[in-house]
Length: 203
Image (cartoon, rainbow, N blue to C red; front, side):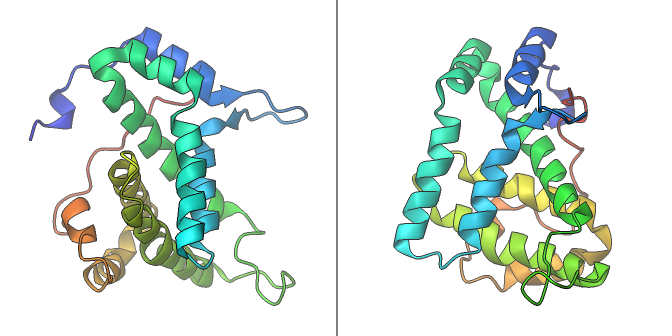
């Protein structure tokens, strides 16, 4: 497999066009909104439910609606052969951003009907469990969605980079997952974590 570091950088015009699509102004906020957080939110919400056949179907519908959106498709078509790499870069970048938001949000993972905040170690456990016991398995089950494997790898890398001290726990969750295909999609844990994708993808 070709080393990602040896690939030529994507053109500035493509990055500028993708940035214009991805980021948008939010009234009353200094930070721009990020459309690429949507698929992670959809995935998290539906993975937290019953994951019944109906829930999986709805998750697939919402994710496909995002990826098949006219503006995004036009950008990827314009990118030509660079389209898959462009999409992958922004998925990896946004997955890391999404998990960081979960970690830093005081409202995430509240207990007792939202009255009590989770302790930091409890939140850490929840995020890791959500990623490897819920979100990645949900994506693995959506076999009709071509972006699924890339999203799985993006979540996996984001979690490894967010909590590098918990790699053994992540390894255990992957190795004991009901869906054995996870091990063929995700990189081995003894390998070094790949270089950060999309470090220059910010607005």
